[in-house]
Length: 196
Ligand SMILES: Cc1cc2nc3c(=O)[nH]c(=O)nc-3n(C[C@H](O)[C@H](O)[C@H](O)COP(=O)(O)O)c2cc1C
Image 1 (cartoon, rainbow, N blue to C red):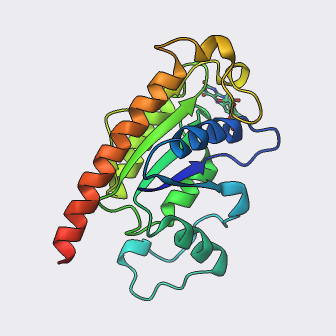
Image 2: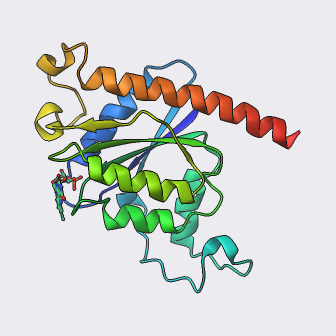
């Protein structure tokens, strides 16, 4: 499984980067998983202002900065979106990046790792809806991490007391990644069969 972990915020002092590092560490420990971190801070995109939906625009002209983002997400098997909650939804920078997508996520699974005062649950609900328009298969397992800022160090290591909890964040993350792998394998086989 070629897995991409997308960091959904870009602000100075953001917390989402360490949550993404935590995900990358867990995914990298799995068999047959090739994990890549995509930090939206490395993909500065203008606000979407193309003349029509990119999905229905055969004349689409893609700016180099946008092409770089599209190239990073295409030809991957599965996606983890790391997002906090900004005003009960996802950060605008993440929504803007998704607005540029066309077929990159079609028939591929994704999950969401969120945080916030209610674990980012409302952002996750919105993101599930948004990703359905990208025709990604959002799997039934997501991770909503309450207290993430204190629970992880800057390198994405979970505090020992939390790591010791068999029902804690590591267990939730493992379940989500295992499920993502299952869907990734199943959907990759289906996509390959369709291509034959
Ligand atoms: C503009 C803004 C709006 C926010 N709105 C919410 C919110 O609606 N619900 C919530 O639980 N936390 C909210 N927060 C807190 C963030 O979820 C928290 O600061 C989180 O760490 C932000 O992610 P980041 O550090 O990667 O930017 C908000 C933070 C910001 C900056």
